[in-house]
Every structure is written in C-alpha cells, then in structure tokens.
Length: 387
Image 1 (cartoon, helix red, strand yellow):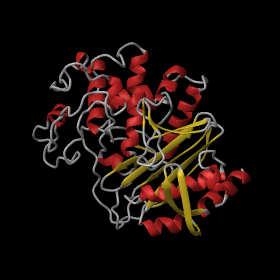
Image 2 (cartoon, rainbow, N blue to C red):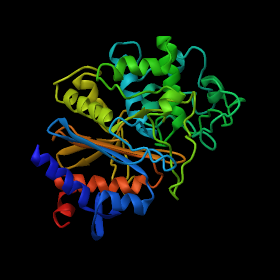
Image 3 (cartoon, one colour):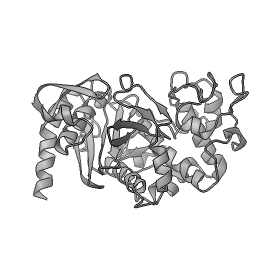
C-alpha cells in the first residue's frame, strides 16, 4: 500500500509541459509541477483519474471541485461527461449483438433499420453502408451541421435529429462520399448505430447499454440517461477556457456519440475487461476474437495528424508501437468536458483521465505522460527516460 501511495505522489508531482513534435514523438519543457498547479494554470476545476496496472485498476483519485460556483468536492464517485469516449462503449454493445447473430458487420444497415433509413443517393448505388463503415467512420456520412445543440423548449426524437427536422436544429444525415473510401469522423454514424440498436432490440438505448455493458461489469456509476435533477447532483458541470461554469451541453436524445456520464473507476473496469477478453480470460461482453477485431486497424491514420494515433479499429483508435498495441478513444464535450481512455492488452497497463474543463485535453496529456513515466510504458519509453 505504501508503494502505491508513493507512486501516486510521484504521478501527482511530476507533470511537465508536453508538445507533440511529430506523431509519436513528444517533447517536454519547463520544470516539474503538480496536478493541482496545472489545474490552476489550465483553469480546469476538477480532474478524476484511474490507473490500470497488471490488468486491474490499481488506484483512482479525484482532485478539485464539481462546480466552481458551489465548490463541492469531486470524488471518485462523481460523474463526468465522457464525450466521444462514449463511442467505444456503443461499439461494444453493437458488436455484442453481432456475435449473437442479430446483426452482420458487412450487411446493409438499411436492411435492419425499421423506423428510419439512411437516405440513398448516387454514392450508395453499388456499395451499401454497413455496420463496419459506421464503426470505422468510413461511411461517407456527414457530420451534423453545427453539432447537436440542446433543445430548450421541446425535445426532438432521434428520427427528427437524423432527419434534421424541427424541433431539432441540426441539419439532416447525408451521404457525401462513397462508403468505405475515406475516413471522416462522423457523430451521425454513431447515432445511426443507436437507432440500429433500438430497432433491433425494441429497447431504449440507455437500457440496452445498461444490460449489455454496465451491469455485467458492475459499472454502477455509469449511465446514458439524460441527467435528472437527482443525477445532476452527482455530476460535474462543464467549464469553459476561462474556468467559468456553463450549462451542460448533453443532448436529450442523441446519446450514443457522446452522452455517457461515468467515472474513471467505471471506465477503468471497461478497459480491464477489453484487455482480459483480448487475452481470452473473460467474455462478459465480447469474445477474444471480437476484441481482437476491434483492435485490428481497418484503416491506417497519419499519426502526425491524429496526435500519435496510427489506425482506426471497430469503434476504437489504435496506437501501434513495435510489439505493443495501445487502444484509445479520447472525448470532448462542449462547452467544457474531456476524457482520455487508453490501455494496452499486452502489458495490462492503462489509464482513464476525465476533467470538467475544456482545457482538460492538454492537462490530461501531461497527466498521461506522468503516469506513463512512472509505470514505464513502452509507448514513449525513449522520450520519457530523459524526463
């Protein structure tokens, strides 16, 4: 226990300013500072961390407050917005159904959708959009115009969001390029997966995620439900670049792409499950063969453009370095929440870092590299040796 306490203290006090030089190459500048000091510099009020070592969550700890206006302390049970990290869990749920033959990775999605269909045009004549396309952002489907804004007066249905119909304020789903030809990140793609899950099971998305993912893993502080007043008491509020509290930007019906409320401790359980499944030691959500498919790049990405990420798997991003393969999915929710989830199935190492400030992405990188240095991750071994 003393050893873990000492490790936590070193992680907390060994942060340095980080700069990506070229893909996986990083540089550090300035002297070592603490998490609390950097939180103040970045104007990020709250941070929560879990660290995975030897295939288990070794420790979890929170810092700061949920809301600068109330100064209520953030704990390891405090809910943070996961942003696009939500997609990694949505992917697991849909792949769970694929394994049970309810769906096919390569069959036409429109053949399974019931109450809404992807609009066909000149790009979908020969190649129909399938689940593999949606999971890997290669469907050719557009990003929503202006993102998903919250409806203050009326709540749109998911069909209205997909159609861009009032009271939704976003534009409609469109296919802009030939499926399978180009990687273009699409939140709409994951909303179609949400629709597919609901149509195939006849069950609301939040209930599906609870049944397939949260309950088997005992992720008791995780939900895709739009937060009630009671739930809001457990959650952080977002903070902008000035550190000022803002109203949450969660959408009431567009959930699969970024609606997860959770904790790093719960997400750490998910990371560990993927690691164990990969190694054939668990199958509570997915089999070993399916997780290996998740971690196999469907398309290569330029690490210079994607902050070191080298490939896109099924609902997950991949960073390959020699023999080790790290899986990750960062998340950002406007106006001010971030999440960084990363793990390596070969070494049993990983971390989840969540914040309630829009500048938290930069802060999370500094925390990530402090953890990587302490736990001697192979990914940045050469650069970290000199820090």
